[in-house]
Image (cartoon, rainbow, N blue to C red; front, side, top):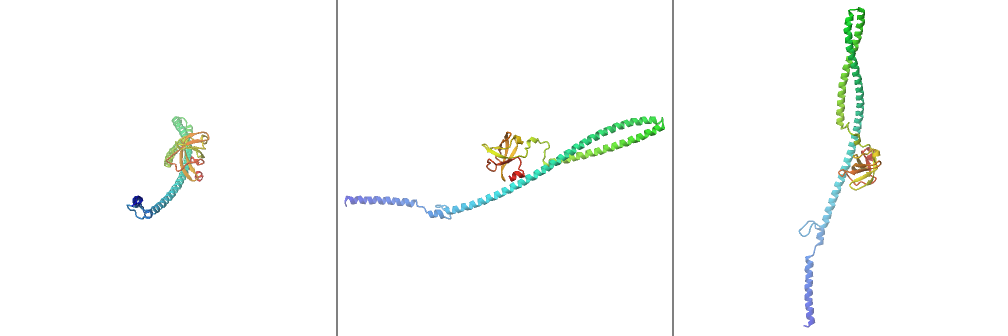
Length: 290
């Protein structure tokens, strides 16, 4: 064998070893791609096929979307019910306030009447005392003259009638006073049942206002188009909404004559607040319809 033949022999042997190594590596790293995609049952070698995983994820997505739609529907029902409840309470509050005003006017009238009746009663009592003195005097004068006695007797009868009338008036006033006390107690129960605080500070209640968000800043601060000239004060609460979507409420922290700055309550925030969103101190029917 020549040198060239030996070289070819060695080269063939080395290449055989190289190809054998390639074959071993390819066999060790071989993967069944079809099983990886379509395997219906997980095993130690292959997990659940990608096709079945995609199908499961799609089913999960459909279920989650159904749950999301149901939650949106329930939220819409709750918002509608809350709006109806607020409208009903506002109507009841206005009715109770009107009734309270009427009762207060009646009470003032009755107090004036009672004062006048008390003064009349004092005059009547004074008159009674004077009549008693006059009766004693008349008894002495009766012995002097029968004619004078008859005249004085008629006067006594007249004054006695006035006394009885005054006593009847006194009893009527006492009964009326008891009726007034009962009416005041009834009105107090109605006011307490309606949750109306008659001693409430009127400055703590904002007037009915409607405006716009003019700027949105950091730290949940917003600027609105309402100011102290409109009756807005620090501490007043304003509601934020966009069309029929309630976005939360904010508390006024600073006021100027024609604008104010408010802090959004994160607990009630239901969406991103933007410029041109509506604000109102009360969610009236006008605010709900935008």
